[in-house]
Image (cartoon, rainbow, N blue to C red):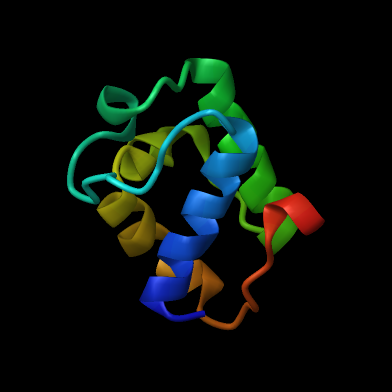
Amino acid sequence: MTREEVVVAIKDIIATIAPDEDLSGLDNAERLREQIDLDSMDFLDIVMELRKLYGVQVPEEDYKELATIDGCVSYLHPHLADKALHCAANA
């Protein structure tokens, strides 16, 4: 998966968790929770979807790395480089 596909994967998972949120104007460098209405359970759901769709285990001490889209890409790209992009809604 390319870095751009990681962005698509993360946004797809967020869209599944928070379907009423408009993700089109997200700033990739700004904290997600400051841009859209995600609570701690939503965040855990995102982590669980990453595991379910891509087999990526994110240890709790690394959750802070997923605060922004850019952080997600930096953290997840090495784990997803050999994976294919899925749509969470179709999984």
